[in-house]
Length: 394
Length: 137
Image (cartoon, rainbow over all chains, first blue to last red; front, side):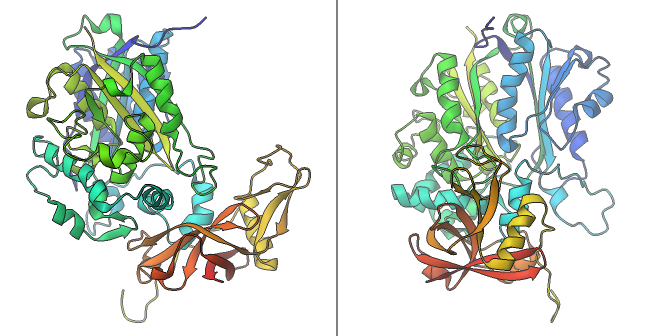
């Protein structure tokens, strides 16, 4: 028996906290607040939730159920793909709903991405949960970390160096991604960088982090949480908001996923295999998209994902992101909320929240007129990828 | 940092196959796993051969030479023990046997070029870990 997944589930509720650099609110409280907001937005009550998928390590589904008083949790799972987890979790949620294992599934993520990683002398309330060990811990602690290489910016630079050399990608090209996200952030009350102008000169003057990455290629360390609620497409039509259908999705893992340096093709990421599966399931072409919410941990990683998605040919991203094509008013507005680069880093669940708003036609000044289709990507760990194709229910 | 104080760098407590890799490499220069059934060389060490899935793997000495495949220069690091060294170069070396290893660059950062021939130098740190470093040939 094959169960048709495309269009079988819908996002019916969304919630988000503020995006902060510094808070005494720990990750559990942040996640609970975002989750309650999403459940309320869906027109549901916590006891209606019977499936919970929190990305691994920060909070457990049991803690969420205990605090929100969800006495009969029927399905709990976790996705171990770093920043690719929330978008991949939409696929797991859809499978649980389509098979009847669960009815209403909460997908949430939150972290103290700023506060848990800084010493705060004398603050007994400092959030301290940092998540669990990464899936590639054995390789990174034996072969990368002893050389002072402990940050994503450093790991990814090993393939980004090859990418920029192969296609002659200049900082001015990557700047287009940073500048588009910043301009969109100015339209978003919740964006950390809203109102803070950035010019190409500012971008070029920002200090180097790990060649070829400079500071303004990198996203924001943030304290925040997001949540969405999914249910069946059928049930979604009886709930308060315009349903946003999950038309297709997939996850992909580079090989080997736990070592960035020994891949047959170091430029092939998880999204390269995920994207064709997702678009094929959705029955639409990448070029049909009205909105792109692309995981922007780093500008150059956005460019590689655009190529992997099929928005352009390999090496074509530098042209694709030029001339306002990815800005509001252009053909493919990208990260209309400001993204990880200028709104805040919520592991891409904020991209799903924004795509949902766009397809509900509730995105305020950042609304893409008449948006019907959106692609969301997730990217995490050493190159895991996930894709969701979302559509406005007609 | 106060004057004269040195901040210790992260040193892994090596385990499993990775400990075996470092033990062999400390004793006899760079070693890479070799499959006794099909001859495949691989790194990092695994329990099965990536070419034929045999478990008959052992560590065999490598030439210790290779070519720079990629690199980064870090101006920032989470490791306070490395902060004073920034900006420091880290290179991905494609060994002459095939597998790639990550090594610290011994030399001027401006001299790092993809394609440069290098030799791997082991800097012993403790009885079961040594830092892999690369210098131009």
